[in-house]
View 1: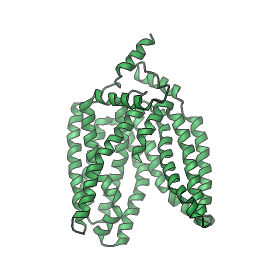
View 2 (view 1 turned 180 degrees about the vertical axis):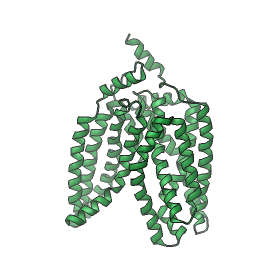
View 3 (view 1 turned 135 degrees about the horizontal axis):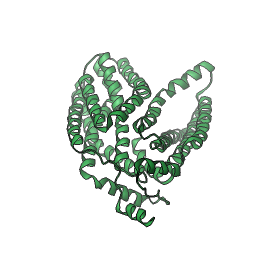
Length: 386
């Protein structure tokens, strides 16, 4: 899903958060209607004709929800002292949505209705939210005016045309302005993401081996899913507030601490330990996304923020794929049992914690710039305005 952030960033830079939010919600509506049609067809014996709609609908909902969440980024300069909090609300809304299946199931049971009817009703609510987003979200012009006021510097205008290659090329040039900083953060986050990603993808299988029964494995998976909604809704916004107060330096320290606690508890066959592990790793994932977004407010000018962030996320996820694939291969090669999961998992945790600690030291000695840097082309554009 994070891979969607690359094209979404391009869309955001071209049309702004208001359009992203509204169009994203509309795509979610279309996706829900596709899933609804697939479910409706399955209940009437037409699944051979409508089954393909299900996967397309799910992908549309996933893409649309990420696109719609970019509406929050239109508000970051309207709340200059609360930027991390605003971004955390975007992440929290996505995590709280993990409770949606439970809510739909409760409605089906309470009112004795089928899934297709519930999805149809929910799509109507999302449609109304699209109208609300268009009404309430600042447009691109207001976003740039507010960013200019807060940063206290003239800003280049947003791109007038959707030039994919040019936008990606210029975003890459932004990344190369601070090569050492971005290389350090990219390698650190790529490594650190492997541990929580490995745990999240194998909770059921790991729980079965750790506690001994398939029922325990399902229980651990359910625990992780519930923790995602609770932590995302409660702790992530609170952590965003702390990030606003104490800054990015303390933020990196918190990420290191969370990874260390996860490392200390992941291998313990205790439900209390697994609850603690799930909590800190879910919070780590949320703060991971928040850190990158807040980080690039310092390094990317508003006219290139979306594409730069999306390109960075894409590279980060591609880098993390290789060690993650190695971890899965280790599970297959090691003898059956809990250590087949625990050894690669704890290895990721040790390496991730050490990498984050080293990055803490680097970041404390190499703070980000006070204002985002501009490319020579952007400075030339500004000069032509005078």
